[in-house]
Length: 374
Ligand code: MG
Image 1: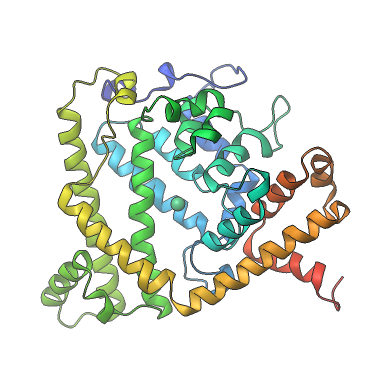
Image 2: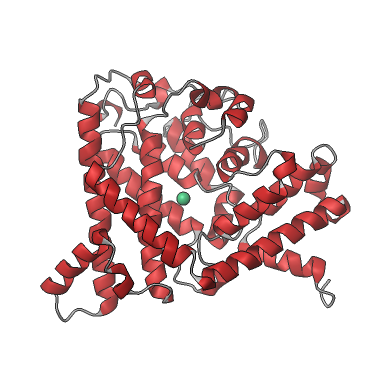
């Protein structure tokens, strides 16, 4: 596979390696081993019961963070293959990118960040890195998953200069104004393509947004008109899926085209030159604008929908009350977090809460606050 890759692709042979040395795995590459470790982690399994916009028990058809991560990996791999970049690395980063997410999506993250204000804050990107570097307890020889530098760097999409200073080598690019590998850049935009499109799909399915409202979104309505014209008798569910499928294709094709142009405008001989170049994986200017329009639509009509806001308010309350309860009495923590809480009380409470699934957080809240439960 390696011989077909572009010279500026990331390869396991040129990897900056793992924090704890391990012999090369027989029969699979280093990045494939990373992917496998991520899939076998407990944080990965919990993604099934964590959500982005909708709470997990609201409906069986909505995306969870697990299906979202798989969609990101699929979109990311397609892009990487077309650009002769390393699919395995894109897959590993994509599957790990949401491991640090709290229960209840953005609402949970905001609530936990507010609770942690005096204790260094909470940021899901940093937490994803913390999961793979520290929190997973599975291997005899090290904490975390001991992933390759390139995978860890890709997981850490953004980070403040203050946090970067604490993170050693993996934080260095933020201090030195450098980019990560093209594979990491792909995973980042595949994430965006995946969630914008599946939020449209889930938003329509839930009835929170309508096709009529989406008429104002050019990226959507252009394809919708085409589908309706070509298939006048098609059932609405199929019309929606066909429209979204075309939207994803358009975004992916544009991204590949623009990225190829951007790469051609450089003279990239290896990954180090990728790091020094500006961000190269990008939409074209027109698509960027259309994508912005779609995001603005979702913000106004879906993420701020009163039913989503109610869910967010509830999530905020649950997360804050859990945090306060565990801060006021650390003995309420389960044993493995209690031990860590002796040295870093607030951080280990945040680790415990961030690891919860939506339904676990709801149950734990009930166990702590409802009189009739124990
Ligand atoms: Mg994501």
